[in-house]
Image (cartoon, rainbow over all chains, first blue to last red; front, side, top):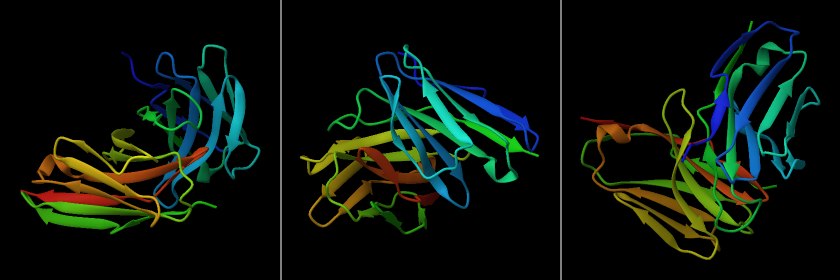
Length: 115
Length: 109
């Protein structure tokens, strides 16, 4: 059974550019969450999608956006990149949204470096 | 707002020791609590998931307990090995998940 797949694994971008990251959840999982991890801030919740709808959102500026497709694959986009956006971006999938017993499975992450 | 605290932030032990990692949370209205392991630069690997109605879960040398009323969970690692060296994070789920900052464990040979 394939795990959570995130692409690309590594990315280097220049300030002001935009970037799109992709996440394919475990087959059958309908919920996808995104997290930003930095040494100073730890794991910060970005947003969670279920059935193509954003269900929860963290405290990030509008430059961070996402979407989920009908096959549950998800993308997140960051526009007008800043140096502080350099981080490991992690995607997690879950079978259902918010129900007891369903934990998260994480992908290996995308390491984004903004120069 | 849910807050999750993990103490200690770092721990160094000799191989073979039994150890306990702590996780506390402020809002007891949770669906479940999950313990993860993260190796440097990698994603998170799920270790144990405890549902809100459960008191503990066990997997091999790992045992996690949950006391919702006091807002605490512990992860017990028996007979630690150098391969256990990693950062351990707990996450509580109520809608979205809230993560602690983790405990970085070093097991010395």
